[in-house]
Image (tube, rainbow, N blue to C red):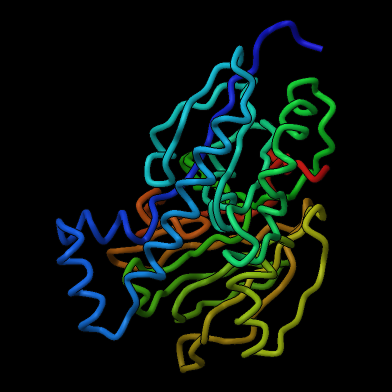
Length: 298
């Protein structure tokens, strides 16, 4: 056990009410905005209260002789995590996915503020269990699930990690043109972009794609596999649609060369402001990442 005091980093995202107040200025203007659209201010205020109460409770559960820091979702790409940090992700499942690519093996305790505020796949713990989990993590004894991640690596060396999924396409989601290379097969495609989903991501965005296309994949979140899906590939005289999906593994990467004149991007887990450019001629290899999310499960 280390004699150094751990640093706990509490990661949250702004509430709906906070975002609305930032946009409209006053409570009265927010109430008017919502009522004019048939929405309830009371519901949004209640969720804000639950979140803020949970944040206050979580802070009170951190041992007083430990270090502490806070990070908001929108600031994650600028926040400096340290190797010995213990991360509390307080919110919905998507917050853990947003966070994962900025970490390097630190344990993540996913906590849901309320049982009716999310699925609890990545934030399965209640506030009541937080003191015990923090102590286990501080002692280096926390049981963690090493969830697989996928990596996009450009030919120039820039890279981007994802816990749930990568999106490769045009930033406005208009038609994207590219050349695929997979298991010795090459195909030029025009589609609304590609999604690459890990076992964790198969429960999210990819789930709706599989339901619509009947291209079904099922593997565990710890398996070093990811499924790719070409979104509505258009068969024409110049573009094909045979490479609609497939499974990437440690030994089977996916290669993509951009034919997007301008606006090509690769982003991960829904954070569009943190992206790789993917304009005409850029080449990316999609492969399984060495890094894994250490999600505390018990």
